[in-house]
Length: 444
Image (tube, rainbow, N blue to C red; front, top):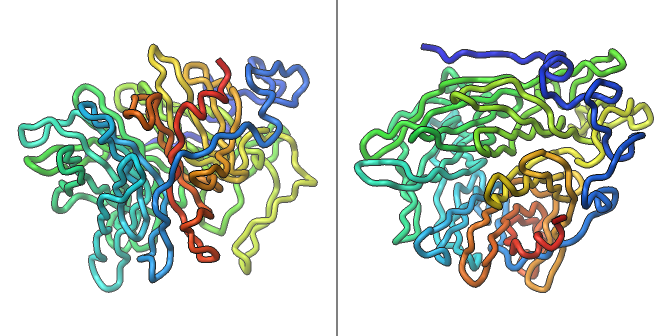
């Protein structure tokens, strides 16, 4: 039986759906910073500048996206907490063409997992894009934790069991798992494949939300344990808007090369709500009640939203016409909006952290109300350089031994410039930030 597919049109998503982020002048609109009538939230004094600063405690070894480096490019982290021995917890990070990396809390690499080879000479090999975790899954009579990865090269999920004793990942992906979105290998080779990822559990089952590269599409998949292995089945789909009707009546679409839509990458699920970052648009909240997608509402928009732009095929870049900005964009996020992660402070309290990749800042929103609180940057410190153009991010509130007694934030650094970076050879890696360094910035 085919999963039901629903297209949420741009007009209804932004102007008609209950709970959407209202435009200026609409009933119920809460003014953005800088708009007449705006009342600053606690801590918003930091919102107009570069923000307060946190420094990383340490970093992982550099990854080099060249032949000598194995085409390794850091992208998205996840933090696995060892509940019995928190100091033995792990950080798992994607390295794109170079697969997956596993690190300890000191940033040392414990394991490197290669992406799968190409299925035939005319196709691409695996390329690991995003990673997330699910815990407490029954597999072959045992309760285990899993790391789930989007393989955008093969349009599949790869699933790994976390071995807490050996501190290694074991591939438990079932043979012959289906494509996430493509109907056949020819369509996989067109590269509109599985991209972003967020996982959650409900009613004893595990689910993965996956976005589709170069489109606004999302898919919801249920993981299916089969003996010692895990497969999955698609149970729902959703298309976010790709064109938008602005309050002045004009229609606007984010600029990109012809045929490429506004994709989603950064995602997280918190207490039955999916937060999804549509890179050139803003980030959305979507109710997953009943393990189905419900109507999306936008939480915050990128500054570039609504700005006319022209694509240059020679440079493969878009030129924004800021002189004709109609003024409907946000004031906080510079495209792309990327990594989303939630710090759980208990009792429904905490913070939703958002990576504003375009200006290398991070924004904090109230977990319960989604109100903007403050912004900060991760800057150079004595132990490691800061994080620039960050993609994925992950945070946990669990104490992780003496090193991180209040929790840990791990972020992707898109321009690693540390002492071991081998500059001018470009490299990427992951930065570990003691949560106490961030907590000192956030309003209380």
